[in-house]
Image (cartoon, rainbow, N blue to C red):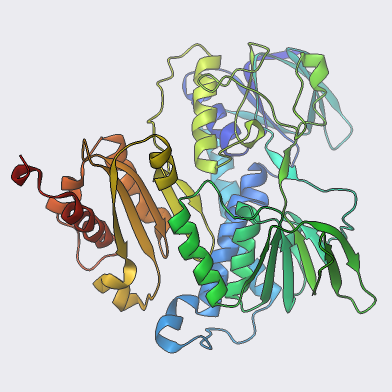
Length: 468
């Protein structure tokens, strides 16, 4: 039986970053991946595919040029599912090739097969060819990710009623789609299909969407969705889904209302992919959603030499934060020093339009009783916004009146997930409103919105040198 310094189960963002980190420090590392190719959910069904689908949809539909040429403008008149898939396959091949090269370069061994615990330090691997292996690890990291939640009362068929993993394999684009679940995944896919001019209905039992995002940003976002005829049915529960004889689907809500569409995407949550790991043999138990509890600083589970990182530990469930969790967990596991990461990290939602946020929301600032002021800039106020034909887009910054420091930055609009990093840097470096007022930004750029929003806040806050 072969022993490794670190065994990693799963090759998604957390697994691959943790494995490579340990290997770079000279440790023997084995990665076990049950999928056909390395990369995990992030590469094959989650982050990379959905963002590639988004970019393809925006390019082929001519979405970004419609501010100039009108809502009827399209680069390609008839867009098929094959058009969307073609770019996706090229991107996935590239991602897998890069990852396999990283593993080879850093001498990370990887085996394809399903892993399960035999003892707290021994794993059994069932390979596709029927062979069974046993390996032991001084430390073990579980980075198995999540899978779509599939309740028994939903008649999934992979054709007209799908989960978010199956959506990438559709053969034909429907004329209408109903999305059950207004979380990040549901909203991203709903807005992508809306950009392709499908009739889209979103259904969610909560009265509000994206409740962890600044309310002003969400309100602007919802206005843009409704302006292009997306239907949001909030505060109503989807009780059943029925496939009709004419090929359509009928969703019955808890108030008796019925929604008919060509296709239904069920995107109401995900569960940790821990059910096949035989966790009791390791002395571990998962919660009702298959997630593992960990120390938020070390990512150790209740069994000290077993770690967990990535989506399987819950919020924020981002590829970017999962990578950092995997790196920290690996360093702790092999006895290396792991510095605490910076306090503020960005959250990106790749909807159409994008949303990105970093730091405190206005609601959180109010709850903490911090005297504050906001500065706002709209993308149409920038010259670059005019050049790009943008008639929407909003950047909001929140500053402390006492210290004048930036407390949060929130953006909705084109390029939000790129722009947010300027605010993130200022937040982590404890910068003030003066940074944005006194610094020069490239012109014309959307980043100039930072200066406009900074001046907006500064004008309201007053010049500190004239106030004493």
